Amino acid sequence: MDNPQKPKITDPATGLKKAEHYCAYQERSQQEVRDKLYEWGLYTTAVENIITQLIESNFLNEERFAKAYTSGKFNQKHWGRIKIKQGLKQKNVSPILIKKALQTLDLDDYIATLTRLITKKAGTVAESNTAKRNYKLQQYALSRGFEPELTMEVLKNSGL
Image 1: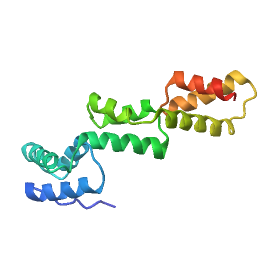
Image 2: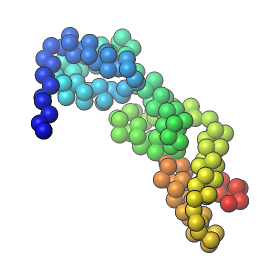
Image 3: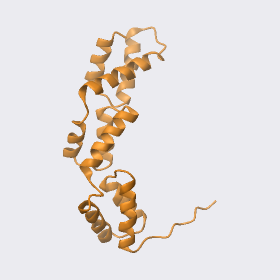
Protein backbone atom coordinates (compact mmCIF):
# COMPACT_ATOMS: atom_id res chain seq x y z
CA MET A 1 0.00 0.00 0.00
CA ASP A 2 1.21 3.42 -0.89
CA ASN A 3 1.18 6.08 1.78
CA PRO A 4 -0.58 9.15 0.45
CA GLN A 5 1.66 12.20 0.39
CA LYS A 6 0.60 14.89 2.82
CA PRO A 7 0.27 18.28 1.20
CA LYS A 8 3.29 20.51 1.73
CA ILE A 9 3.02 23.76 3.62
CA THR A 10 4.20 26.77 1.64
CA ASP A 11 2.75 29.55 3.77
CA PRO A 12 5.06 30.59 6.66
CA ALA A 13 2.08 31.75 8.77
CA THR A 14 0.52 28.27 8.56
CA GLY A 15 3.92 26.76 9.31
CA LEU A 16 4.24 28.96 12.40
CA LYS A 17 0.79 27.90 13.71
CA LYS A 18 1.58 24.21 13.19
CA ALA A 19 5.01 24.64 14.77
CA GLU A 20 3.46 26.37 17.81
CA HIS A 21 1.11 23.44 18.25
CA TYR A 22 4.01 21.01 17.75
CA CYS A 23 6.04 22.78 20.46
CA ALA A 24 3.10 23.18 22.84
CA TYR A 25 2.46 19.44 22.84
CA GLN A 26 5.85 18.63 24.38
CA GLU A 27 9.26 20.22 24.83
CA ARG A 28 11.28 20.17 21.60
CA SER A 29 14.85 20.97 20.65
CA GLN A 30 15.54 23.52 17.95
CA GLN A 31 16.84 20.77 15.70
CA GLU A 32 13.65 18.71 16.07
CA VAL A 33 11.54 21.73 15.09
CA ARG A 34 13.87 22.61 12.23
CA ASP A 35 13.69 19.06 10.87
CA LYS A 36 9.89 19.04 11.14
CA LEU A 37 9.58 22.37 9.32
CA TYR A 38 11.75 21.10 6.47
CA GLU A 39 9.67 17.91 6.39
CA TRP A 40 6.56 20.05 5.99
CA GLY A 41 8.13 21.63 2.90
CA LEU A 42 9.20 25.05 4.14
CA TYR A 43 12.39 26.69 2.90
CA THR A 44 15.47 27.84 4.79
CA THR A 45 14.59 31.52 5.29
CA ALA A 46 11.03 30.70 6.41
CA VAL A 47 12.29 27.95 8.74
CA GLU A 48 14.82 30.22 10.46
CA ASN A 49 12.24 33.02 10.80
CA ILE A 50 9.72 30.61 12.35
CA ILE A 51 12.31 29.29 14.80
CA THR A 52 13.22 32.85 15.80
CA GLN A 53 9.54 33.65 16.39
CA LEU A 54 9.06 30.46 18.43
CA ILE A 55 12.02 31.37 20.63
CA GLU A 56 10.77 34.95 21.12
CA SER A 57 7.28 33.74 22.07
CA ASN A 58 8.84 31.13 24.41
CA PHE A 59 7.40 28.12 22.59
CA LEU A 60 10.96 26.95 22.05
CA ASN A 61 13.53 27.05 24.83
CA GLU A 62 16.62 24.89 24.51
CA GLU A 63 17.52 25.03 28.23
CA ARG A 64 14.00 24.04 29.26
CA PHE A 65 14.11 21.19 26.71
CA ALA A 66 17.47 19.93 28.01
CA LYS A 67 16.25 19.88 31.61
CA ALA A 68 12.97 18.17 30.69
CA TYR A 69 14.81 15.58 28.57
CA THR A 70 17.29 14.89 31.36
CA SER A 71 14.72 14.46 34.10
CA GLY A 72 12.44 12.42 31.86
CA LYS A 73 15.10 9.97 30.73
CA PHE A 74 16.43 9.59 34.26
CA ASN A 75 13.09 9.25 36.05
CA GLN A 76 11.23 7.20 33.44
CA LYS A 77 13.88 5.16 31.64
CA HIS A 78 16.54 5.16 34.39
CA TRP A 79 19.31 6.29 32.08
CA GLY A 80 22.69 7.35 33.41
CA ARG A 81 24.45 10.64 32.70
CA ILE A 82 26.51 9.29 29.80
CA LYS A 83 23.49 8.06 27.85
CA ILE A 84 21.52 11.25 28.57
CA LYS A 85 24.46 13.38 27.44
CA GLN A 86 24.71 11.42 24.20
CA GLY A 87 20.99 11.79 23.57
CA LEU A 88 21.21 15.55 24.05
CA LYS A 89 24.22 15.74 21.72
CA GLN A 90 22.19 13.94 19.04
CA LYS A 91 19.54 16.64 19.44
CA ASN A 92 22.25 19.29 18.82
CA VAL A 93 21.98 20.82 22.29
CA SER A 94 24.97 22.98 23.21
CA PRO A 95 27.55 21.49 25.62
CA ILE A 96 26.92 24.30 28.14
CA LEU A 97 23.21 23.48 28.32
CA ILE A 98 23.96 19.76 28.53
CA LYS A 99 26.22 20.39 31.52
CA LYS A 100 23.57 22.59 33.17
CA ALA A 101 20.86 19.98 32.63
CA LEU A 102 22.98 17.13 34.02
CA GLN A 103 23.69 19.17 37.15
CA THR A 104 19.95 19.10 37.94
CA LEU A 105 20.18 15.38 38.74
CA ASP A 106 20.35 14.72 42.48
CA LEU A 107 23.42 12.60 43.32
CA ASP A 108 21.64 10.62 46.06
CA ASP A 109 18.77 9.74 43.70
CA TYR A 110 21.28 8.91 41.00
CA ILE A 111 23.19 6.45 43.20
CA ALA A 112 19.95 4.99 44.58
CA THR A 113 18.69 4.38 41.05
CA LEU A 114 21.96 2.74 40.01
CA THR A 115 21.89 0.53 43.13
CA ARG A 116 18.28 -0.44 42.46
CA LEU A 117 19.05 -1.30 38.81
CA ILE A 118 22.06 -3.43 39.74
CA THR A 119 20.18 -5.22 42.53
CA LYS A 120 17.26 -5.97 40.23
CA LYS A 121 19.57 -7.24 37.47
CA ALA A 122 21.56 -9.35 39.97
CA GLY A 123 18.42 -11.41 40.59
CA THR A 124 18.31 -12.42 36.92
CA VAL A 125 22.02 -13.15 36.38
CA ALA A 126 22.67 -16.87 36.75
CA GLU A 127 26.44 -16.83 37.18
CA SER A 128 28.20 -18.55 40.08
CA ASN A 129 31.64 -17.04 39.43
CA THR A 130 31.71 -13.72 41.33
CA ALA A 131 34.09 -11.98 38.92
CA LYS A 132 31.99 -12.91 35.88
CA ARG A 133 28.80 -11.96 37.70
CA ASN A 134 30.18 -8.53 38.63
CA TYR A 135 31.41 -8.07 35.06
CA LYS A 136 27.94 -8.77 33.69
CA LEU A 137 26.35 -6.40 36.21
CA GLN A 138 28.90 -3.71 35.37
CA GLN A 139 28.28 -4.10 31.63
CA TYR A 140 24.55 -3.79 32.24
CA ALA A 141 25.02 -0.55 34.20
CA LEU A 142 27.36 0.80 31.50
CA SER A 143 24.79 0.01 28.82
CA ARG A 144 22.31 2.10 30.79
CA GLY A 145 24.73 5.03 30.66
CA PHE A 146 26.18 5.00 34.16
CA GLU A 147 29.80 5.88 34.83
CA PRO A 148 32.26 2.94 35.24
CA GLU A 149 33.82 4.27 38.48
CA LEU A 150 30.44 4.80 40.13
CA THR A 151 29.24 1.39 38.98
CA MET A 152 32.32 -0.30 40.48
CA GLU A 153 31.83 1.57 43.74
CA VAL A 154 28.16 0.56 43.98
CA LEU A 155 29.02 -3.07 43.18
CA LYS A 156 31.72 -3.07 45.86
CA ASN A 157 29.50 -1.44 48.49
CA SER A 158 26.35 -3.48 47.78
CA GLY A 159 28.06 -6.81 48.41
CA LEU A 160 26.42 -8.56 45.44
